[in-house]
Length: 184
Length: 104
Image (tube, rainbow over all chains, first blue to last red):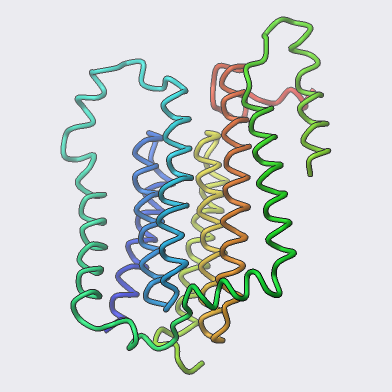
């Protein structure tokens, strides 16, 4: 039973990823990428890692993809405006992502109704993960926190608006490189 | 591996296919945003392999590594998208072949 669900989820993930890599429009590719991440979350759930599945949905498909959406919106790629917006509403654009995500929704309903989580065999709960994370891996947690801090400072520095005068234009990339080098 | 209903080989095969898709996408696309997306796909495939292996051996280590990969992906994508904004401001395009000032 869960083997079939696993193969369906894998097929959805692969197709969505291939579609995401071959779109020309960044916003369309983003939709396919989100579906791919949701399908991988389903695979995690079927593997008996519900905590990883939840994190995949919340952080990957939620937070990181929202960053992509913000950047695509900030880049003013849609200056053609409402014409393209109207084109986007025709069914050929959204019908494939809708079908793929409907497959994932159907799988979730089957899992919720059909059999309970204990039958999937190997179940690693969030408690075990937490005990391992803050036990033997506590140094890795510290390093990850420093990495996130470096990412925060680096993103603030890189993303700020440089003055585009000629003098500043020449010194700015050098400054950026050295700063990133120090942070890492 | 007992306790794992799904064969580990199949999960690793799916992870490898996802990784190859991301790698091919990384090589064929020249848009910076698509390159970042391909990197996300590759990190995600690696995370899938880690979680599958951790489940196969009944250890929580796989999911711990998954969380570390999550942190790496978040830091990488924030800095990368900042660079995307700078490239757009400087070169007025997202084509990576235009940003080649180091090429001389």
